[in-house]
Structures are given as structure tokens and as C-alpha cells.
Image (cartoon, rainbow, N blue to C red; front, side, top):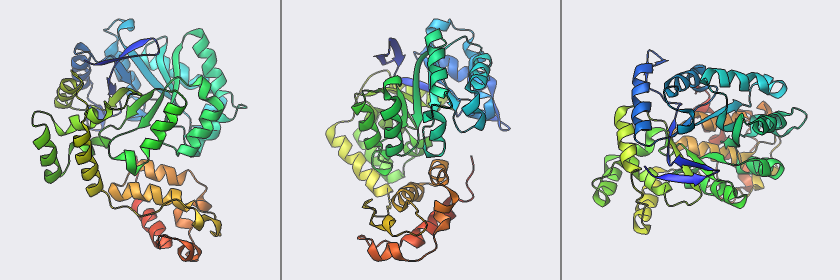
Length: 374
């Protein structure tokens, strides 16, 4: 197992994400999950990442119970504070104490503000709520060893957060993979963390399995280059080229996934420059993007003040695969500024240098997300 020495820890580069445990009848299959976690632990995986909401609140309980058979100083446990709950603003202690109890531990190695994003950024940055003040107090007591955050928000939102609290954040968890490097400008988010000297934890390295299940044509291109490695391994190998990536979460739900990932992380074999060109070609072939350059000419004349470039960026994400992160991004805006509020006045079309039919695309975006749910 490959390890990273970071924040006085020696954490495995492969981390076990606890959002996609195997299930039976919509409930966690605890026996199968224990089998997966035990095999991972016995083969060097020592970092386990859960959250208050995963599996309807059951993930923390299950991973806590499974890890009880191991010495507390042999693994690193991370969980997250749900910033979008109204009560988080007034009583973060309620959730923190509940999480310690559910996990059966007396401290968390890593604790995160869950999803720094537009819809609930006030919960975190408004000092009247005292959320970060409280967490820093718990850190001083030793009940939080390292404090950080996860983010699905826009770069501008995360930058504003870091301008205020960057000196308090020790690590950050971001969505990063060879497709989102361009599609979601993960490159910009990665570089922002480098600017603030904050190590990156990676979530969605295979984009929910999408990058492990390429078309036969694209999969054949990769197999020709590395016949002995799985398609999923390419996503992890690509991340091994990024020096600020310290651990990579994989939401493993089958024994085969665990075995394959451990094989991949038994040695570092980063992607070569030539191989990276092939990945870039595959990424380009997978995308059908609206050619918005975010010049923002369109926003000046929008009577309902829709952030059109942001909405088109979210829609580009959905054009690849409809997903809740894109919907959440759009719904974080007031209803009056969401895509369905476009009045089709045409001001934006007349001024767009790329000649995009913006009202139509906003309507298409809303149709793509309106029925999505977690």
C-alpha cells in the first residue's frame, strides 16, 4: 500500500469512502460491508471517510461498529458536519456529539465542514453562528485532530471561504478526476488549494463509476496501453501525477472493487505524458459542451439576474450525465434566479459572442434536473 505522510499522519493513499456500502433492500448489508472493510484494513487501507447523511444516517454507525475490533491508533476516521441543516447554525454541538456516539469514538482524526457551497455558505462564514469557533474549541480539546472541509461549490465561493478561514483549514476534499479536470474546472479548484498550501483529498475519482465503465472503443485504447490494469485504475494512476493529492477516496461497494483498488495502490505507476494525451482525447470524445466562455456579457442585461455562465456550466455537467450536484448548484440560487425563471426576453442571445440560444439551453437544463433526487 502506498502512503502519504501529511498532517502528522501516515495515511493510505487509497481511502475507503463510506457513502456506497453494499445494500440489501435499501439498507446497508452489514455483513458484506464488514467483509470489505476488513479486507481493506488488513491490506493497508487505514483512512475511512463517512458523513452524517450517508446511507440515511446509518453509515457512521456501521463503520464505527466495524472499526471497533481494531486499535484506535491504527486507523483514521473522518466525518462531516451537515451545514445545510438549520439547526447547525445554532447548535453544531448537537451533531458533533451525536456523531461521536454513533461512531463509538471519543475523537475524530479528521473532521470536515460538509460541502462549502453557495446554498449554505452563510452557516460557515457568518461568525454570529459560531460554527467554526465551536469546532476550533473541540480541536483544542483534542476531540478533532485535524479540521478541514469538502466542497462542491464554485471556485469563487470556495476562494471567499478561504480568504476568511483558510488559515484554519488543514485539508480539503474536492471532486477531482481526469474528466472533471476540464468539465467542472477541477484544475482551477486544485490550483486554488495549492495557492493556500492546503493538501487535497480526492472524492469521486472514477465519477461514481463512470470512468470505470467506458465505451468498448475507449476502453480498448486504454487496455492496449496497459493490458494488465483495470480501466478504473487509470483514474487513480492519473491522480498520482498530482503532488498535492494526499489521499483518494473510493466508495467501494463490491469485494472485486476492493481487491482491484488495493492492487492498483500497491505501487505508484503515474500516467505518462503520452498516456495523458490519450485520456484527454477520450475526455473530449465524451463531452458535448455548450461553448460558453464565461465572458458574462449576457448577465449585464438579464432582467431577472440569472447567473447564466454558472447555469450553463452546471448544464454542461448534466449534458454528460444528469446529477444531483449540478441540480444542487442551480438550486442554491434564489428561485427568481434559477434557470426556470428565464423570461425568454432574448437580451442575452443578442449579445452572446458565441451565439448560444441561452433561453433554450436554460430550459433544457431545468428539464434535465427537475425530477432528480438523491
